[in-house]
Image 1 (cartoon, rainbow, N blue to C red):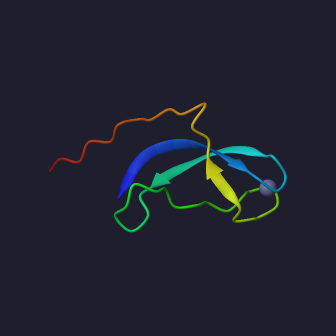
Image 2: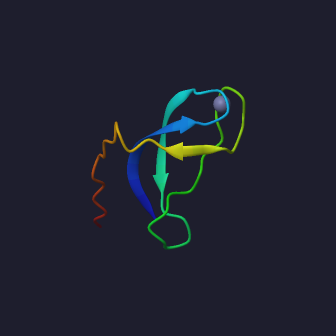
Length: 59
Ligand SMILES: [Zn+2]
C-alpha cells in the first residue's frame, strides 16, 4: 500500500532523497528504497522532515 511521499536518508553516503512511502508487507514499516546516488539499500525514512501527500482512491 502506498502511503504517499516521504524523505529518505541513506546511511551509507548521507544522501537525502524523496521517494514513495510504501508499506512493507502490511506492517507499519516502510519499504526501504535504494539510494539514487550509491544504490545502497541501507536507507531509512527520515522522520524529522516527514511530509505526506494524502492519496485518495476513488472510482
Ligand atoms: Zn547513498
